[in-house]
Image (tube, rainbow, N blue to C red; front, side, top):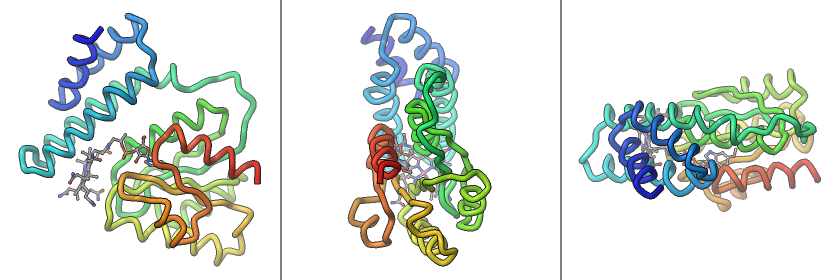
Length: 212
Ligand code: B1M
């Protein structure tokens, strides 16, 4: 099993999409738990890609092909992470904020929420405040979940929180934020209702918000 997981990590780091998918399938066939494959192998592989980019070993194209390998491998895990027979726990509109194109973390959060029985409306990437709000209103959502991976796009989260208040929806539509540079302090500072550091805790936070 260790060989398979090592080859999965290497395939994502090196952007070998076919090898990554084969390795995920092999790991699943060998009985590996989908959440553990994700947490212990695939997410650390993307962290390594970020580290290589930061120190100049990788450039944008390498990051892109690693992201493509990650996405294809994730597609194989998706059916195992998303339950189908759970009562709807609430509706969440989720998206990556304006100016930001990173969507792997956001997609994972969507999958985990769906797996926990939430109906998830995915607004995609580069999502403007009006789009978040319109989608929440159109779909009767209780929570807007925002993801940002860039320090430069974090302020877009405040724009959404402010737009919810300006639309007179504060308390009716709750806001929840996450993403690598985002912190609980930042959530408190901008008046977001919730913050989660990872996809698994995003489910706990969404459940807490629904219970309030
Ligand atoms: Co970009 N990028 N990138 N990138 N990229 C980072 C984020 C960076 C940290 C790399 C680095 O320098 N080490 C850096 C940001 C620096 C900063 O702002 N502090 C960076 C940069 C600089 C850039 C560009 C500006 C590069 C350039 O053009 N010169 C550019 C910006 C484009 C834009 O958005 N406008 C850019 C572009 C890209 C690609 C397109 C090539 C690609 C994204 C492809 C895609 O997503 N489809 C990419 C990638 C792949 C990365 C890294 C390597 C990996 C991100 C990732 O997918 N991580 C990243 C380095 C890193 O993060 N280590 C990097 C795996 C994912 C599972 O984790 O998204 O953190 P993450 O999600 C986690 C949690 O954060 C949390 O749960 C998830 C799962 O546990 N979470 C939430 C996320 N959203 C949440 C929402 C919630 C709750 C929890 O509630 C709603």
